[in-house]
Image (cartoon, rainbow, N blue to C red; front, side, top):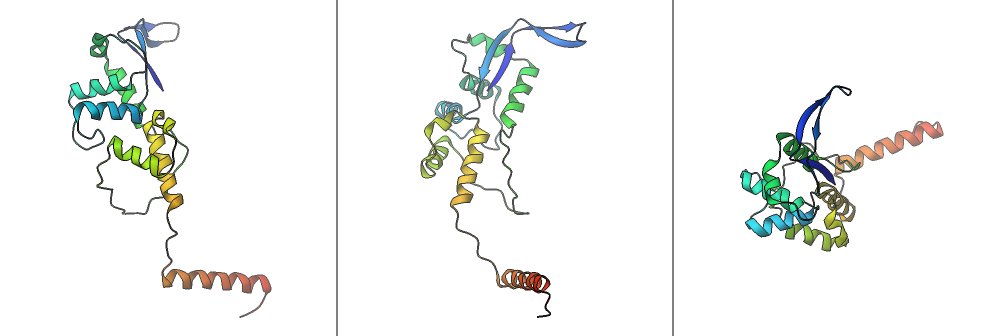
Length: 180
């Protein structure tokens, strides 16, 4: 969850020697599947895409992310550049310690990802629906882990099998102190 202050006045704090925002309204935001679903319901197009979003679409997504009840409409028009940067940084955070070793030169997926597709993945992998409130990147990581764990092991090529056997034989020879 991200908390930002909107509509405050920026001033300089001499004691800390830094700029601070005085006043303003705190707003709590969550980049989740629920937020994505609300946005796609309104605009009827995929949010996760390479097409640029208008300012109106981006502000509406911030509204969809808002957890704080009864935020006045005009407050969204007072989002500062720093607020926008904080929101973008939060949306792009990995939110997981899991990492993947992707195959080099693997082409990116061309599949269009929508909220319904993510809900489908959750159903297929038996991911509880309470995870729809997680940070979206964390949910995507879980889906990817489930996909990897349920995939059939990749068959080794003849060359890979031969290499593995050579390594095993060499290791056994050195352990037993034999020549062959």
